[in-house]
Amino acid sequence: MKASHQPARSLLAAQLHIMQAGPGLAAAALAGASQFVEWRHYPARDVQDKDAQSRFFYHAHSADERVEGEHGHFHVFVPGNGGTGSFSHLVGISIDPFGMPMRIFSTNRWVTDETWIDSAGMASRLAGFRIEARGRMAPVAVWITAFVRAYKDDIGDLLRMRDSAVAKRTRKSSLEQVLEDRTLAVISEKQVSLVDYFQSTGINQ
Image (cartoon, rainbow, N blue to C red; front, side, top):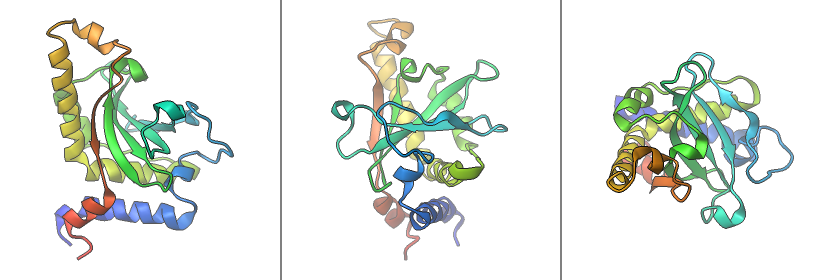
């Protein structure tokens, strides 16, 4: 096995494990809830790695605000610079009703009330990302860890695109005004396809 193939193989294994164990990632993300309620967090408290301090939750916007074909999305965070409990948004991951990822995106600071860190400061957090959980959400945590590692370069690009867009807006407004601009929620996004990704790595050959 080539070393460069390992992230792809880990993601494929995580995806297949969830698909074979039950109804798929979209259902697993609901943490056992019988209903999927718009805007509600799943689980109610973020899944958090006590050692790495990374965390995530899943939710969906109202139908009129949701991306076409999206079931919901994960918000994934890494430790911020504000001491214990602070966090910074690493990436959003949209999935379809079948549990297949369809896009990744970055958000403005006000969306999650994060500690804002530029892409250069996020680089080491991205490179060392992991999240572990116990119980029902453990397979989802494995999947998110595998996804972030597999799409590390794309996420890095996404964060740099975010910074560039923010920098352009600060020519006319202060950074604080841009980060709190309620008309600017998603700053950058990229479409993703596991089929295309796995084919590009050649692991099915």
